[in-house]
Length: 255
Image 1 (cartoon, rainbow, N blue to C red):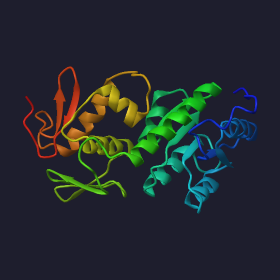
Image 2: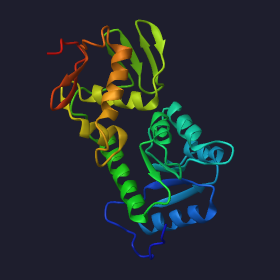
Image 3: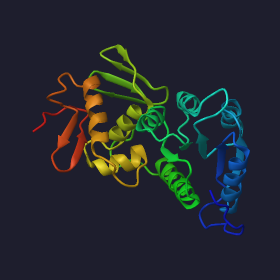
Image 4: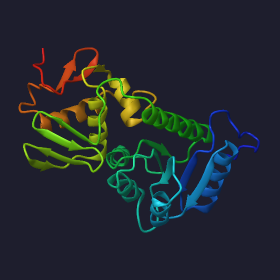
C-alpha cells in the first residue's frame, strides 16, 4: 500500500466519521491510519480483537471497522461475529491475504460487508470506505422502499428478531448465518418489489460488480429450505424470470 501525500483531506461531506482500524502489523496500521486521516476521518487503531471490541463498546461511536483477518488470539472472523451478535450493524471491511473463496464466504457469513484482499491498492481501500459509509448513512436516514421493518418481523410460520438474530419457524428455533439474516432483512424491507440479483449483490454483499448470479441463487435456495413449506413451489421467495426475486410476506403461488 502506498502512502498518499498529506493535504488530501477535508473532503466535502466526509465530516468526522470515526473509523476503527484493527491490524496487528504496526507499519500497515500506521499507513492506513495516516491515509484515512488525510481524507478527513477520525481514526482509532487496535492491534487485537479484545481491544477492538472494547473500543466498539465504548462511549464513542464507531462508524466503520477496517478489520484484519489474521489477528493474535482472536481472529477477524471471531471479532466480526461478536460485533454482529451484539446487534451492532456498523459496516465492516475485512482485510486478508487469504485468496480462497471459502475464506471470503466465511467472512460474509459472520457479517462482513466487504472483503478486500492484501496487497490492496490505496485508492480502492478509500473508495470502499467511502461507499460503505454512504450506504450505511442512507440505510439509517432513509425509510426502506417497502415495508418498514422493526426488530421483530413475522411472516408465514416464521418469527425473526433482527437485533438478536433469533429465528423460529413453527415454534422451532432455527440458526441462520449473519449474511442469511442480512439478505432476509433486505427482502423484508423491500417486500412486494422485484429485486434484481445485481441489487442484492450490491446492497447485501457489497459487490460493485457481479461476479456470479449463482451466489444470490444459492442463498435464496437456502432461505426457501428454511421458510417454505414446499421449497420446490415457493410462496414467499418468488423467482421473477429475467428480473430477480420478489418477497411476498403474505404468501403467493409462484407463476
